[in-house]
Length: 188
Image 1 (tube, one colour):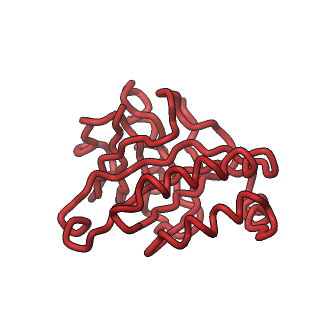
Image 2 (cartoon, rainbow, N blue to C red):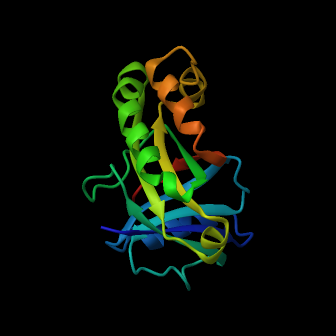
């Protein structure tokens, strides 16, 4: 199953994120609505929906940027992200020919990473190639990871773990990485 990922800019209304989440969660195609924590502007929201969904006209939306995503190793089902904790959305821009190796290394590291830290990989998604990707020979991937809290994220940077050794190999394939934190907005 493919997904749409929207980075949304909202109006100045105080309850804009809550109203957006309430509106979108009423629709079966919405998998998740995230509110910014670190690295996103305070007037933003992140939305994950089933492919083909458009959020134009949703309450409070001033602008949005859409990315079509295909899951790689995860998610393997259509379940929404787990509630609680924080989520880090990490966008990777990698060499276009390195997608298979990047995904393989990720899957190799995750068992140790999830066993050692209070974390859960929700998904690693390959973004649909756009004109800029084609022109530069790059591909983009979005990694969504749930951590107990920001402290757990910091502890998970431990360079001595087996997982981090594999992640260092993955880094060699990475042109740019942009990790930002958010929280999953509750349903209902």
